[in-house]
Image (tube, rainbow, N blue to C red):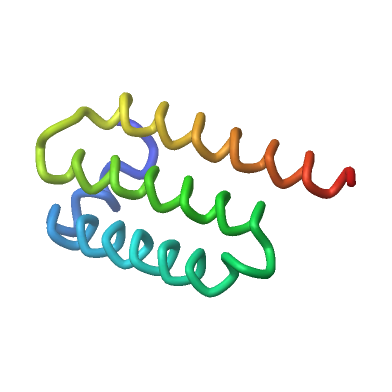
Length: 89
């Protein structure tokens, strides 16, 4: 059995769904707060919220975990690169 699988199985699927919905809403809320002052940071937060939305779809049964993890990593990498390119100026 994979490391941490026992811990993962302790909580129901709804718990993980709630965690990702809260993270999604927090990302969108923070993005809206910093949209006018820090455009690159707000786009990073929007990409983060999209990646959390993909995880929500996973817990609803529409996508698989490996797919959602791949999408999340790609979106976060793009967001980090956007932040770094914005810092260069």
